[in-house]
Amino acid sequence: MMTVLTTSKLRSGGVEEWDAVMRERFASAQRMPGWVSGQLLTPEDDPLTRVIVGTWNSREEWMAWHDDPAFLDKRAVLEGLESAPNVTRWFSVVADAGMGG
Image 1 (cartoon, rainbow, N blue to C red):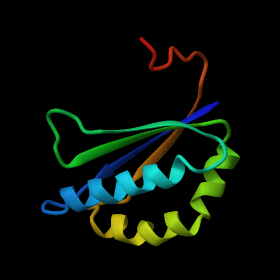
Image 2 (cartoon, helix red, strand yellow):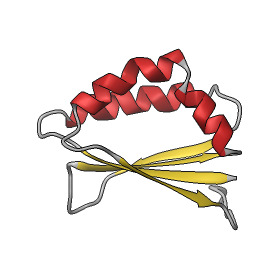
Image 3 (cartoon, rainbow, N blue to C red):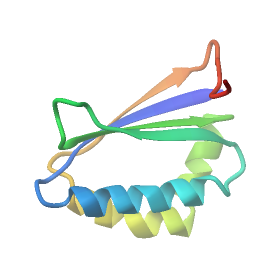
């Protein structure tokens, strides 16, 4: 399993639209082979920053999602609402406690 963290800096005034588009992208990711889980986070002290945490069975499956028309359709919208290019970093999952209770 691989987890990808993408940090985005948003433009003031575009936060609600960016969040809504990202929720749509999560919905499309859930239908893709290899999807495990995802979260959209914002630091308590930085409301214009978003961190996307996505876990996939493989990096190749994540890349295939990036070729999906539903993904590509929204990429330009998101980039237009960002104040700087996003930063992506990959991690190998060593252990996973899951979301169970």
